[in-house]
Image 1 (cartoon, rainbow, N blue to C red):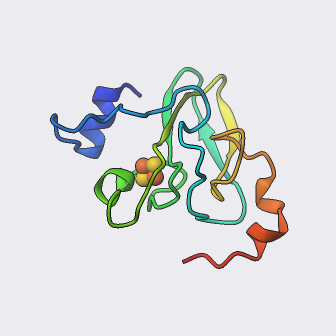
Image 2 (cartoon, rainbow, N blue to C red):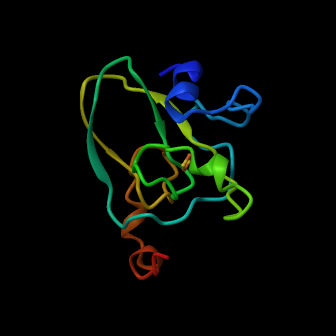
Image 3 (tube, helix red, strand yellow):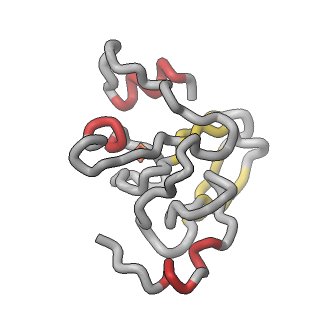
Length: 123
Ligand code: FES
């Protein structure tokens, strides 16, 4: 999904520098991990060559995808993460991280199994 398409889907105004800090390298530019949204990965179907925008902040209501909350609630929720754009290497199901603690964003690396994550209270 191109930045212009994402802008129109999320209805991001032209004056917002939407791509600032946007990561396409497979890892969020922010070293601070996002809010724990769920405690297990989400299996989703992806299509080869298609671009996706994975929520890194953990506040999106459309998990595992970014819904723009990191833009609109950045100040009130003190959100420091930006979404991760990735291109699916092949068509099929993938496990995407929803605990937002993975080191292999957007993919699950098993971080959700850690004790502190399983015992965390999701606000
Ligand atoms: S809503 Fe979480 S990164 Fe955009």
